[in-house]
Length: 323
Image (cartoon, rainbow, N blue to C red; front, side, top):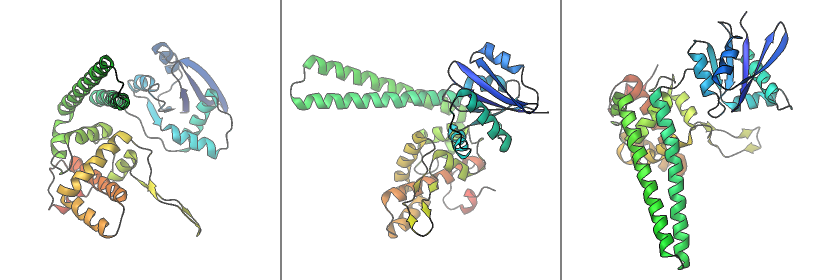
């Protein structure tokens, strides 16, 4: 009989919990290849291994198990946190968390995990490093500006800070070129199609390919919108509570930033976005709301173009319908 194995993983170890003859078993393994091999001995063919996406710590174990074609499910940690709250669990230990994950896996349908492609992983890492460099160069510029305001900035220090700024900018340029090179090699045809959409540039095209693994991870544009974090969230109850609606920002902030920028370009050059902007503006909608609506429109177009494997054509109305 198959079993559900819950795993709570950290940098050095991972706790394993599963039911065996109506009794909970608990084991701890080191988060290293030898530990993976020892854990593998517990797994039977039809078992499900369920774990959280705990930073980067789960990746090596999940990738190792995937090479043996085991059933692996990787969950958003928020799902387990909310599940634990509904069960009114108060204890918070690695052992308890592993059991909670196993309990969740036994009650809900699980989706099999598959690792990102090599290109996707490389671009994600480069993009994360790129974001850090941009923060550093922003901080350096602000520091330099604050020193200059005093009128007491030492010329030697000013020169050093300018050199730091120049070095950071060179690193940024280098990483952006690497991202573009890897993206064009891995997703050349898809990127070329996405760039035919007015308002969508190469950076957005590459990142959309990366987060969807070339549009293989999502079955509908609604799933993609939710993943990015543009799904609307309503706040109301009964007749008295009418909170302000807003988007659910549980997705990817990096791609949201790119889509925000694209939406503002699209309102001037993309026919469907121009019409939407004019319609919403005439209704008195705030700019922020319009920007989100345009970003959602772009996601629909991007998803449809990629799935249909056709270039953008503003007069082809059925192009954006995905069954």
